[in-house]
Image (cartoon, rainbow, N blue to C red):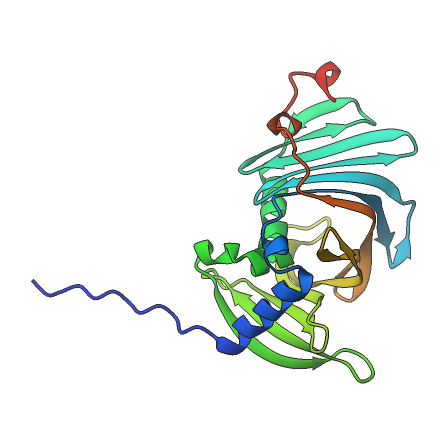
Length: 249
């Protein structure tokens, strides 16, 4: 019987790994990599046709790698969306409803995890069989350049991450995906981009405190942080779906 050969692993991209390693060191080194929970507060502002709408206050709880609960309050109305791995639930304070997340909502959460800077720098992408490559330097304003690396997944989906060539801080996340057109069964290819700004150091860890999201070059949202706390113990009950609205905390 012919001996079965194991396909060789892709060669490591030394330049891409260097960009990633420099970014990790600048963001906090082992302290950054050892973060297990994040509690943050701030404002989320949606944009319509590039114009900002009324901001909503939020508090966000994260337990790495795949638990997140975000509570929004706007005009006295509270809303909660919670993801825990393959499951999730939503509380709609305006309609007083508590429901399981639908498949598309869970898929959106997984997508956000896949495109996050944390996914790249923590190396979680490796278990999904993605490959890391160096793209090169890009213009990023007058006298400024960004180093760019790309994650490419087996299904063809790719994400590019830009880091300042001088400060090594994360600056942009860029990717494309298909989206269903409004009032149509057709889909369209859209470009999405996160622009990361206002880096602040807390507890020895640096992170952007402003995240602007763009679709096809038009801004659709802004996240502005007011406070961030790392490694605060969070109970598992925080992510469990309550039995009913009265049990909601």
